[in-house]
Amino acid sequence: ADLRAFWDRALKKAREVPIKAKVTAYRTNPNGAHVFQVILNGIDGIQSVGYLTIPPQPDGASPKRWPCLIRAPGYGGKLSPIDMSSQGLATFALNVRGQGFSKKLHEYKAVELLADGIENPDTYYYRYVYTDFVRAVEYLATRPDIDPDHIGIAGASQGASIALATAALSPRIKFCAA
Figure 1 (cartoon, rainbow, N blue to C red):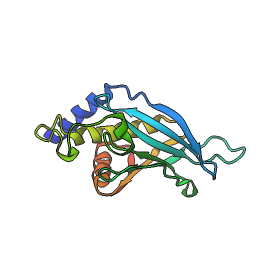
Figure 2: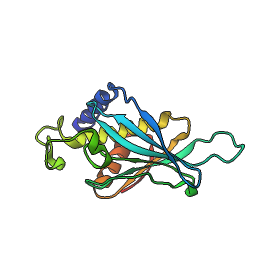
Figure 3: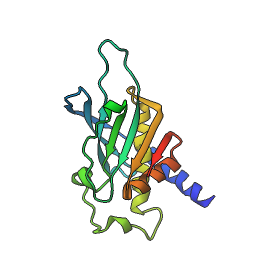
């Protein structure tokens, strides 16, 4: 009960901060897939950057809502845009706060983020990371080009823990690979 109450409080606090998605066109891939850079606000206003790739719409077809796979990086990893259009998937490669391409948005003072704030569950680094990813799921579910009932997440190493935590905390996650 204590663990569920902790995460309920953390997510409630995260939802009090407007996500303020800043979406900019990044590129169009040769196959016609559109890639957007997306910057999202976290629980404490610290931002994370991700790359959303939307498959091309067939000519003359009505707009489609695509299933989406979120990718979570290994520790310190940089996730560039990932195109899985040929598999019929939109993808969202989200760089963790203070790591990868998100590092330029906020430089942490801690040398090792793994233990940053670990002495208090309310200040622990991964509390922020996990709520960032849950909020990213919630953001994706609001997009008219993403199917909110078909969102999954995958990752290895640090990304595996993020994938498992996000799947446990968000009922919108329908598929998890860790």
